[in-house]
Length: 569
Image (cartoon, rainbow, N blue to C red; front, side, top):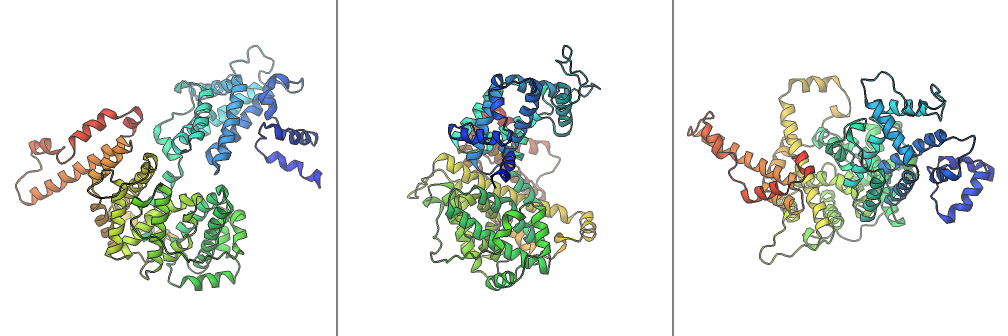
């Protein structure tokens, strides 16, 4: 049996250079498992006659590609930290190899050249040699990647800079800084593709979720799509990164419940809204095998092997403890505590409300949102829970939602109001989640209004019969009016002030500009109705384009803008 195991170790990206693992390394090498990371770290001691510098160059390139993918995609921050440390050591020990990659990429980015030449091939005997390990071969490989993906070094820098934006752990940020320090300064003209600040944001999971949700408003009947998205992009990731057994159980329960809901919904009618009792749906699903539709969807998402075991599990949760009562923000000492308690309260209100359309979907996630590892799932559900409470709840629910959102953006206490115990970093996360909610709701409204006036939209819906063609139980007109009402109760001036307090200067200026433009528009329309002003009055336009906003705050923000802020303003 022992002879069958070693080949599987070849799938391990690398073996950390820990003293405790040295016996393991020796045994694997005796079994024929090639682990070349130590050769790359100490190449001067490992150069052999049959393994030239070019062979190590190719291995360095292959290893760096693997490490770059792990930095960008792995769920565990502990793994990302080890990978970054190993990458830093590799670059430090192989500066010449890394410099060669930069030079190959620079030549490949010169599109006016018809032939890519190796700058070191004039005095070597491998000119024209396209075998693996030759410098010409490496140049051609890097050139091909540069044309297709923008170049390895370019992608590596983009991923590292994106992680600098995304990571919140201070130790991990220090490791990132060390890795960037080993890479050193590189002239942007030597890269295969330009790197801009917008690419940093596009790498983040939250940004990708916003783009996806923007094209899937809930009133267009995307229940199955939302369930699949949550299951494949969030719960699976949360399960892999769960630090404790208890966290794993909470996430597993959510996966189990979502599989039941998806199986019944997909096998009977695509996109059908929930209309049965949750218990009846669950019991019916567990008696049958997984539908072919669901199996295909999970295979497409590349998560079938991960979630299929939970089809036969029998997790149960006894909801003995009632959800906490509001207010939540003023009682919470962290962003996670606020989001978890607030979301749990909204789910409890939803499951007890027969008018709530997606209540079973929310209820299936009640355990996952209470796990630290499931915070991404809570963030994904947050806009839906807010919209559900506002649209299907009573006036009391709407009041609680508005009060919580306003509290998260209020930094100056008034009277006897309690002071929030969150530190500034946690408050920044809370404020950003509210800003993301506001942006998403506003874009949903604007997009729906625009789509209604496009004649091509009707033809497109008739041509494509899919999940999107189903009838939604969310009343679109009522939802749009509820969103407008909610947004009107959150002053843009408060958003601008909160953004400035947490250091989001560019976003604060955007809120001030929107506030000013909205006041000008309403004033102009009012005056036009009264026939007291003309749209062609240039004096009116010149005198009113900055009215109604805090000029002192505007001046302060403009004076504090940094280079990154000015690029995205």
